[in-house]
Amino acid sequence: MVDFTKIIRPNILSLEPYRCARDDYKEGILLDANENTHGPALTELSLDEKNLELHRYPDPHQPELKQNIIDFRNAKPNVHLTGEGLKISNLCLGVGSDESIDMLLRCVCQPGKDKLLVCPPTYGMYSVCATMNDVELVNVPLTYPDFQADNDGIVKAVEADSNIKLIYLTSPGNPTAKLLDVDKIIDLLKRLSNNNVLVIVDEAYIDFTEIKGEHSQSMSTLVNQYENLVVLQTLSKSFGLAGIRLGITFACDGLSRYLNSMKYPYNISSLTSAVALRATSSGLESMQSAVTSINNQRVKLIEELSKIEGIGKNIGGLDSNFILMEILDKDNKPSNEVAFKLYQQLAIDEKVVVRFRGKELNCTGALRIAIGTKEENEVLIERFRAVLKGYRS
Ligand SMILES: Cc1ncc(COP(=O)(O)O)c(C=O)c1O
Image 1 (cartoon, rainbow, N blue to C red):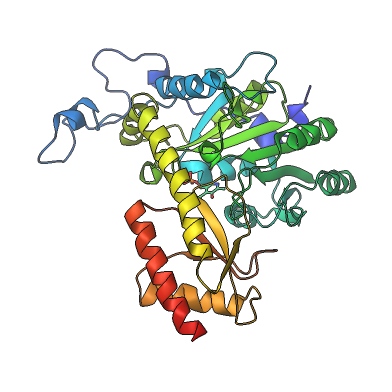
Image 2: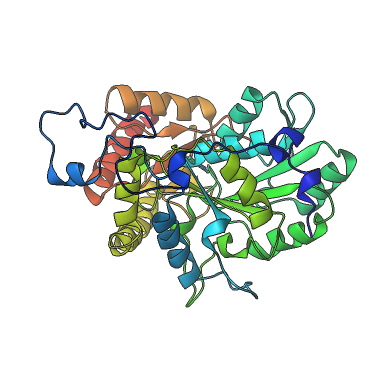
């Protein structure tokens, strides 16, 4: 059993969550929340907008949306699940997973004292949030070239420094596009179960990984089995809904109740939850078919790009909706100089914007390219070919 009183900050342990009258009474003439019951200041209101009652504060708890999410994840549990899967109480919703990342930091790390461990190359927001919260970063790089978690290195760092409270792993990784080995993460969870540290697995890209029969690679269903595990997901990627800002934290009840008590009560807007409800019910098929199409396009894109002189190999994995291609100099060595020049020229002259990632650890010369539609990819290939030809002639 994890002792959450030793992990969660004392001010959060004793926090009295904000309560509103509507937590107790929901029906009748509702004049309790200083809303404007004359209605929204919108000249033309569609029927859908009318039904959303936009003049009302949204539901702070979102049980229907949480039920859709757990139904979806429980339908294909992780192969390591032995007990029951997810319950509504395991979820805390955020304004994108960026809010979830920040909320975990504020829940656990005392500013100026506690530390956060990350495994570069990794997603940049962990360090931005750490800096904002005056939390020091400890780096234990992913192993190279397979981009997996270095369990021995992580355990050694945690044992040497009891101020490390959170470990952020990204699976599949960004910018690596590599799924982390689930068996290895479970080994890490077991080795750290008495260290008062939480292992957070950010699964923003998890739906792009292969589903094996009745099981998915997501570790979200395991949070009750491993109380030191926290999983983050988002509707921004596979669901194609980056604009609505919906992130999900999966945690055991011992942690989830504190996350829910500290979140701003109305952080999920009525517009967001209405769209998210549709996406996580009738939209599931569209999500799956978009994922299949993106994964097929990914194979073709790598194949075509690899034929172009000046482009090396995909140095990352095949588990996300992006690839990490090496750009080479005239001696066929990965080059940041050439990659950055190409990145800029593509964006300015050719109006094709990809991401330069060459400065990330073990990513020299790398451009990160999201998989677009078939038409977008064809234009991208053609423009890469034209620009690189100029460099080589
Ligand atoms: C690994 C990872 N986590 C989280 C996010 C942020 O997701 P959201 O849009 O839900 O804030 C991103 C966005 O690119 C990401 O790459």
